Length: 177
Image (cartoon, rainbow, N blue to C red; front, side, top):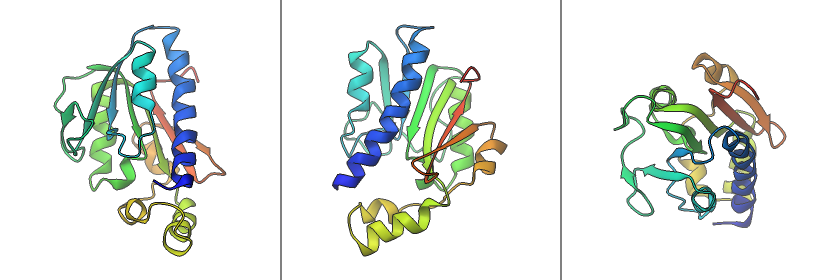
C-alpha cells in the first residue's frame, strides 16, 4: 500500500468513526456488516469497531480476514435488517451490479454508511496511479464506475462530498445528520 492510499483510507475511517460515535449514543453495542471490508490495505477500522464493543462481520469475495465470503454483486446471505449498520468503504465503484449492492445494503441494514469516489476523482486518481505511480494502480484500474451524486440519491441515499469533492459519503437511515 502506498502512503497516499493510507492517507485516503484514514480520511474515510475518520468519517465512519464520527458517525459510529453518534450511533453509539443510541446503542452501545452495534451489529455491523463491513461489506467489502477484508482490509487488504490494513486500514484498521474493523479492529477499532471491535475494540469499542461492536460485533463486526466482514463480508468480502476474498477469504483473508473475512467472516463471510460472498459476492456483493448478488443477493446478500442475510435476513432483512440483520445489522444495525452496514459500512462499505471504497467498494461500490468496483462492482458491476452496484445498484443491486446499494439496495441490498439498505435491505440488510437499518443504517448504511459508504464512500465512493466522485466522477471528479477519475482524472485525478488515474493521474496519481498511472503517471505518478503514487497510489495503487491495480485498485484504480478495477474501478468500474464513478457514481454521480444523483445516482446515489436515486437509490435512496443522501450524499455529502469530502476531500475536495473527490470522494462522496453516501448514507441511508441516518436522517438526524
